[in-house]
Length: 301
Image 1: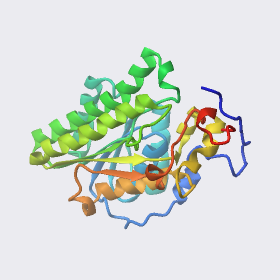
Image 2: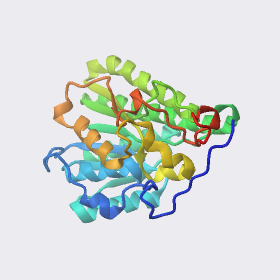
Image 3: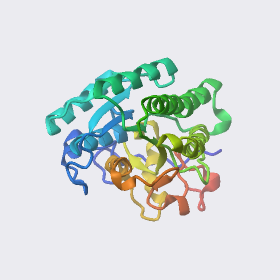
């Protein structure tokens, strides 16, 4: 495929997408929810050191929840915990964990449950991918994305469900996925993994209902996070044009959706996929590596 037209807005240019919310901006975000909405609720968020996971952890703590976060980068987890402590006074449980390791996941769920006396909501936010035409994926690259986004999510889901079944306790899982209905050009690996998680979630939402375990998914669209560093500037510059609102979302948009699903207001929502994409599902296609000339109406990308 032909290379896309190069367009690289400089830092400070209003056309340049942000790389997530700064700590200062995150602390200033307003919420529609009352401050004690999640009082006494224990929530574990994977990938809690940055991006959507960090925002979700911050909001959950602000709403009174007991918060546990995990991820592979201890420094990022500690930074999130410090931010939350400074602004909410709440102490966060942190555990460096590779979710691809089923034994490590088992240990994590056990420690969180023991530390807080149980677990109420699991948010599977950890994941990752890179933009590339599918025909050029290496075997290692394909397996890395599938193992994290599908298998890692499953180990977390299964272990939490087993613990809830053993304890005779209700539970709720929220899986952060993607909008895969129309496919994801240049992200086929994560499309395959996320589609697997979506239909896995719909399946076990039925299987696990007798244990009073609910399972739902959230599919974000173009959300400004640190993950934008993976994509070329020329692709980022047009991401927002793929939805009819012609806007980019931010991590707080997803955090508030997570808080809603974790709250009593969502008690009758099960097996659902909540899309947060500004209408992209009905309108546009994102090209994370840049639009090829072949698909550009005027050939300029």
